[in-house]
Image 1 (tube, rainbow, N blue to C red):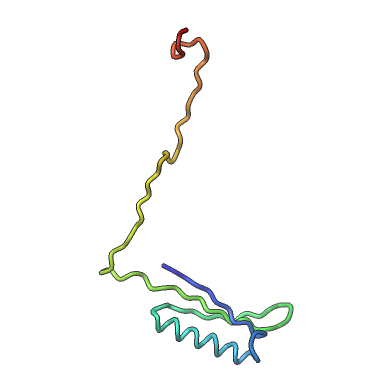
Image 2: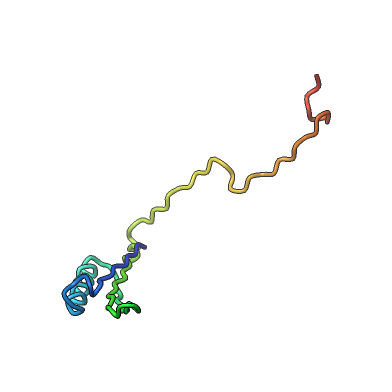
Length: 96
């Protein structure tokens, strides 16, 4: 499921009302494309300016659409095996 977050800062527009209208227009646009939106209002603690927020998530795929899970081929094992070194002169080393 995809998600996005967009902010509309009061200082980027002529006034707070215009920033809010731009946010609301964006919500209408996203919902028209099937996104599920929530909105928020925050304030900048230093300046007092408003921050209008849009959070949107795409709807889950329909059950009729096939789910695609990419295959994961690993060239190495997930947990490497521990190798114990052999001592020179042991039975496993080559005789010269």
